[in-house]
Length: 292
Ligand SMILES: Cc1ncc(COP(=O)(O)O)c(C=O)c1O
Image (cartoon, rainbow, N blue to C red; front, side):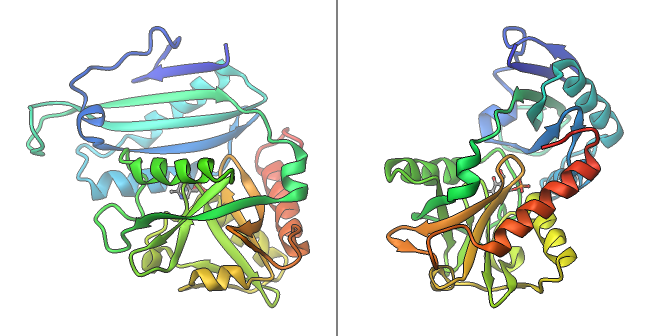
């Protein structure tokens, strides 16, 4: 079995994994989610992901707040049962079922779905050659109620990803309404200039604060590279010395082209490669006995 579910803590096969048609996650996209990377049986950066989930649930007025201790137990049980060498672990928290309509006057019974999927590591070539992105037409609303949250409303990302696929690119970059650099459809972008890391500030850009980007920042600081969260334009990306995309599942992907513009030499840069190597050292240290 390549996929395993846990519905409200009950391990289920794909055929048994059913939720109600009146679930508000389905009706209104009313919920939040996280995608964790499990290396062996260890979920990488679990507390950081749970903190983001908790912040999202709180901003969306989820009551009661998610019981994190119980969630961790369910996550660990699902990952151990699946027993994949590497897995993508998606946790969906929906407001669940309750009275009809968009009102938040409950009571609601939250639905928690965990989906563990075997992860095939992308070919090494992708890390060695780098990836291409386009700048999509979909804009992120930096001042929107849902910016910075990982909600079940994922249609902007779906539309952006379609544009990347149509263009034969790996990822679509989204600008925000001010035309500033924000993030990828399911990744964050970081630039390198003059030996330092430049990152679109999530608060000002509307980007999701990425857990993998946070690990990349930690890696960069260990390597003594300066890090600056700032406001960046697409032109900063075109003129960067190096750039990379980050995400829990993709880790660090060197970005070598945006649309028709090649970034620097068009090959993964040396600092990006050092950050990737340090990222993997952090994974190996925190996810023992996993080895790349
Ligand atoms: C819109 C968006 N931005 C950034 C990311 C990267 O987040 P993380 O590094 O926590 O996986 C994701 C992850 O799927 C995402 O959906």
